[in-house]
Length: 118
Ligand code: HEM
Image 1 (cartoon, rainbow, N blue to C red):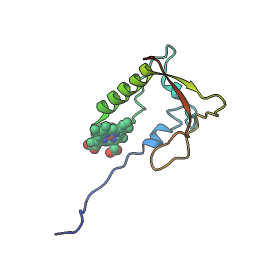
Image 2: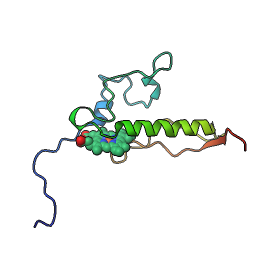
Image 3: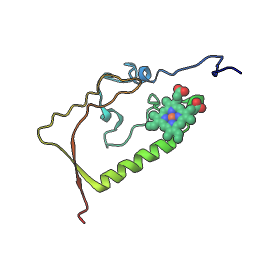
Image 4: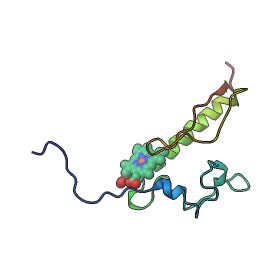
């Protein structure tokens, strides 16, 4: 019996960072700008160049669950709290340096004020 698992074959790792930073697909690709995904009426633009869940045979099996969970979590927070900036706190949209495979935002403070008073 081998004392560890051994894999043979080819591993394909998708370059999602490169895909989403391709200047051919995204204007000002180095700038964090969530509004680039919105149309003039504030509607979400469907763009086949955006593939955070990968596409094809290796597409994420949890995509629907992840999107529903994010939607429900966000809606719950927005129904429960009003969010306001902390006066005097310096906010930036620039992400921290890349860590591992994802970008993280800089730590920030925000006021969460309950909408319902018991
Ligand atoms: C925001 C949340 C998520 C993101 C951005 C995401 C993204 C991805 C990406 C990019 C891949 C393809 C990796 C590759 O290139 O091979 C993948 C694969 C996969 N994901 Fe997710 N994922 C998320 C959440 C989830 C959840 C919640 C589940 C399960 C409950 C899940 C299950 C899987 C599985 C099983 C695969 C492997 C699919 C395969 O190779 O056949 N993911 N995910």
